[in-house]
Image 1 (cartoon, helix red, strand yellow):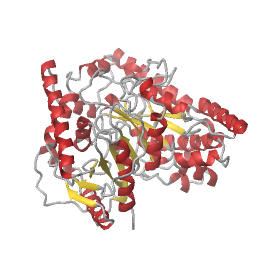
Image 2 (spheres, one colour; image 1 turned 135 degrees about the horizontal axis):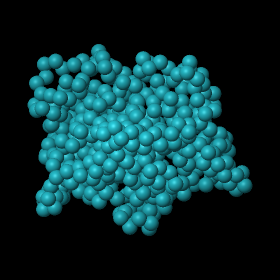
Image 3 (cartoon, rainbow, N blue to C red; image 1 turned 120 degrees about the vertical axis):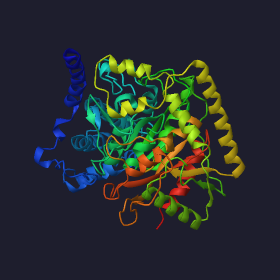
Image 4 (cartoon, one colour; image 1 turned 60 degrees about the horizontal axis):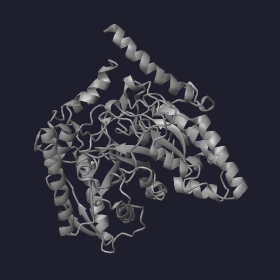
Length: 538
């Protein structure tokens, strides 16, 4: 056993060394400049520390769309923008441990090249001209390790850039940092045996979410204006919600998955999606349009050939409010946010109806059955190959279900299609364009405690596009006290109810998710803009 342990530790050390050697040394904070571990909130540190100039703060607070606007008129140079984000990202790494590798040298070379192009032509090189983008580690980068959070994959080298990276680069974007993910890619957290645990900048005792937790920490702290995550059960949406930013789970088969590394390849019952995390709705649309305008289905035949369309939300937009999924009751801050949103939507003249959860327990159970369809055989093989310790949330995932026969899988696939048709028909029957609901029972949970994903995974089964919206609200103990008299309806509900403490989660950001109709991603974002204007108004 000792030799196996030494082997996995040696393997993990290879990737830790890659990270350590890649960190931009010129931007490192000195030990006396780093906030003490006892300081939980560091979201304001870039401004409060005085380590960034006013220009660097202005650049790194900008959205991707604003960056392109400033560079297109020559106000900011590509290299200037890249250096500012590299500096802030280095700070972020020391405070949050969000990265797996910095790409400083290649990023600066590409930025200088784009500056030369602009100098010669007076034109930008694409809709994402020199926008620094962070990318989740299991999305392949040519010639670099792609371990997906597994020690046994620390020698895996990607032969080429993942398709999504290729399309982003073709649009002018530059990848400057790769981000952390959990072991197994199935945690509501971001910790593994290679690069350790990523922290939440709003409260470092809370989770940044998972599995795109490195991305949420990066974008929320300002290490990048735009990030690339993946979502098969909520892995873009929960991280976005936990860190107070925007995130989009697109309809499956709109963006390419080729070049991603994960256990269980070939699983088709519950579709995965690549999706953006950002600090504005505009940037989510910019991300989607920049890729889809290139007709990625011409390169990847697995994609549905649907271009990005310019649409407006219906004049009589109707929003269904789902206050509870009928399985786990939301914590007080989430319920308050829904109540505030409903009142503001009605005041703005938006049609609002109550949305009763439809068979959510059954669909949640179906999601878990799909995740466990092979008995987690491949996942366990990848873990056993190195002998690395199995982390608690990986163990928890193993309890989601059991291995099933092909016959059983076919039956459940049929059930999934029935649920999809029923949900589609119900939204049409009630005239509901979008559904506003919790993303998670609460705000960001404490590390290692996030387990219930029913508010997100049902939409993966149904394959509806979903966007996470910050509400501008935060946990306030005076407004969100514990419900001491509440009687939980089941074991899941009881477990989640016990986790809430107004004091523990004080000041954590509160987000909600808006669910659209399948392949209605464009209309979803248009509706989200209306919802945001109404709900963020005074």
